[in-house]
Image 1: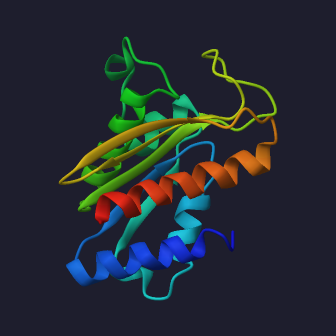
Image 2: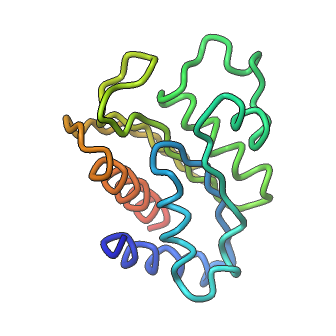
Image 3: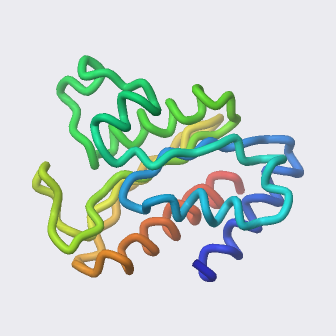
Length: 159
């Protein structure tokens, strides 16, 4: 997690200076994104909350995404990542939503995505969505890479 902290500190400084906040909805990173943001002293000034949205049950209970909203959409996709980021932002009353959804490994997911596949989204005054493919089946390495890329994307959007 040490490689995530410098980015989290940069994000924390920007959010704090602007008086902005973030809500996080993550999946295959298992809470690493939130942990990195919370590791920075003073996190209560900018971190509104987060959840690990790992199952359809968690999706319904924690971010109130219904089966109807998922119609024609699959998990671990860019549209779903953006929906997660928007929902985290809105439900937590944050300035920004940050999300990650993917397949850490060692195998792919039920949607046919290979291990090492992740979609990341930021939703706020600017929205950005991206997909990464590590081509690795190393679960822990993928989790760290996904979290790092999510934080990098968020830092880039913040400027």
